[in-house]
Length: 124
Image (cartoon, rainbow, N blue to C red):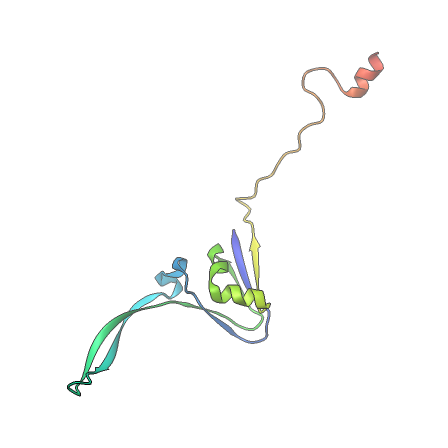
């Protein structure tokens, strides 16, 4: 199914994609190294150490804009779920043509050679 996200406001909205489905480079996910300074209170020295941090990607919607063909899991991102509840964003889920099954209507006539009910009633 294809999901479309529509911004209902006239201002830009930015959503952080903190969900396991979006922890991929395609969605802006990255692991980066940050250099952190630490102060040792005993010696008074300031040292540096490197820490690896995971940074999630973001999704930006301009005012009145829409983004189509998003995965269905976009509805489970907490920031987007909150915006949908508040009415700031509309989420449209449409079934794709390939997954839609068409049902044929069963025929009303019997295939056993007995004819219709009207034919049976006139024979008697």
